[in-house]
Image (cartoon, rainbow, N blue to C red; front, side):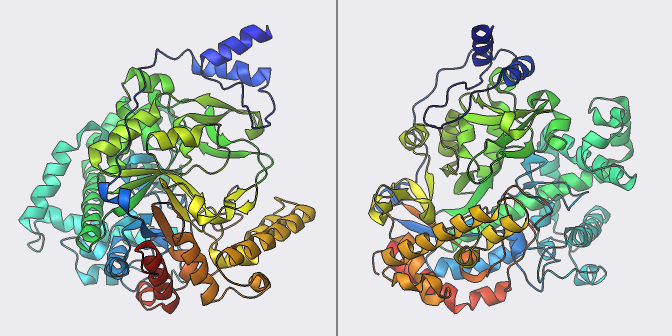
Length: 591
């Protein structure tokens, strides 16, 4: 029975052997669940061997950019949440400092009817944009009195998503009404562009806008924003009740189509502003690994997602019980049967206005840890993903945009080598790079990679220096005191090693993180052989506010903390100016 079950599980794509990972065997119960849920996949197309796009100039250069979380930006002109107007205000300063790209958090559409579902990595639809990125005051037809009529929440410490969403949607609805009423302040060219967008967007856009309108209606009726809590007749896109709703709420649906047009237009303008300012890559956008199981994508196209399974991660030293991300995986069978068109649509949406794309959990291009309903994360298993690397590579060539894979965590044997062969860039975090002799010397970093000091899942530099996330995990019961003591000791050793490698006395590891240490650490990162280096804005001006503590939801204010300085103050930061000058000097060969 075991051999027959193993053969059946292997046939549906379950990874049974994990050499080098010291992993427990997949249980028979898990194998049976996958055999029942997945079904036999169709024959796969022949894999390709072409290389991904890399800008020709980058083969003989090393570049750097700045990574930030858009919603964290603070200014007097936004409505309580950072937007593309704030970003554009920073672009000239960053470009003048030598930055070739600006990296952003995922901008995918979330749930505007339930704005507290704030994680950018749990989108409703990866093909659409979050309207909250819109700079309201840059939309044709905006009048200052519109914003004066709505209460604007403070964002000094964190984003009040409910209040900010109310303010932005109220003002945007007023602007949309002025478009529909023939307000002469709206240029005819803008109206014609919106009309073209609406007529050319197709059924997929119409479905998304209908979902958004229905989602707001359901929330107003006491239901949730996601279709999982809706009455059965509304959870079915093809039902007569949904068709009747669409007919009765045409204006609401049109509003959400219009919001997507405005967001797309402004995102394109932001990328163009980066390039016009001299950035050779421009925007570096982020692709989430999956979508919410109750969002617009799964509602409109239910056969594309696997039901009864969630995406997560296996147990590791950071998370002893594994992680359950609660995301809906795409059906490998459906992707193959549709010649990967739905996946290409996601690639097209992210790369349309970007010079680079970061792929969250890049190992998902080959395998995903899936968890059957009713089972824990530890009871899941890896399932092979068909030919997704080929789709990413083809999209980079089509859009002349490079791809960087976030290959942190449990990496299967040979994965990084296969990425490198296709010129999909790796990610390397300095404190994580260790070899037999200690920390990896800068000259030994792979060239086709992006190096950095931290990412959104890691404490910003000052918090890392103090071990804040270790103490927070201890306070939340994620680790015990013994583990915390071991981690603090390892952190102290890492600080000493990095100080020595950066040319500073290791004895400074017990002192404060001052400007000299911050600049030296960034200079060290810039010295790596990797073609790209990212300065995380939060590492320089963000203080100790953790963006995200993996494995938590509301225990920590994930995706809510704002920067302690405003956009205007960022431009005047002496620490930032010194850091960027040091990085530029190394990257451009003059320091």
